Length: 118
Figure 1 (cartoon, rainbow, N blue to C red):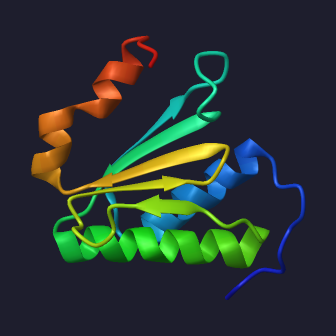
Figure 2 (cartoon, one colour):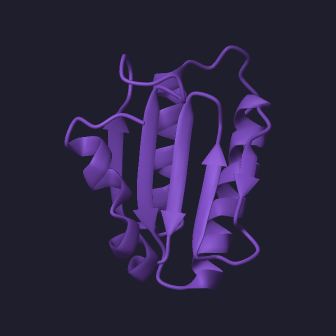
C-alpha cells in the first residue's frame, strides 16, 4: 500500500524507507554505514545482496519506485541492466545492491566500515 508522498523527508526517514524496501524484497546481508561527517556523497550508505542478477535488478527497481511514491524523490540508478552491481543515489542515502560474488570482490562496505573515506 503506497503512502501519501512526504515533502521534506530527512535522511533518517529515507534510510528507514530504504531498509524496509530491501527487507520486503528479500535482500540479503543488509549493512548500513553512517557517512555523516565523513564524505559529501550522502549521510548513509547501504550495501546488500540479491541472489541473482534478476533479483538484484528487481530489488533496485522496486526501491526506486517506492522512494518516488513515498517521498516524491527521483533517484539516480546505474547498472540495473547488467544486474551485477546496482547503484541507487537518493541524495541522502547511497544504496549498492550486489550479486554475492561481485560484493565479495569489491568489499565496499569493509573499506567504509574501517573508517575509510573516498
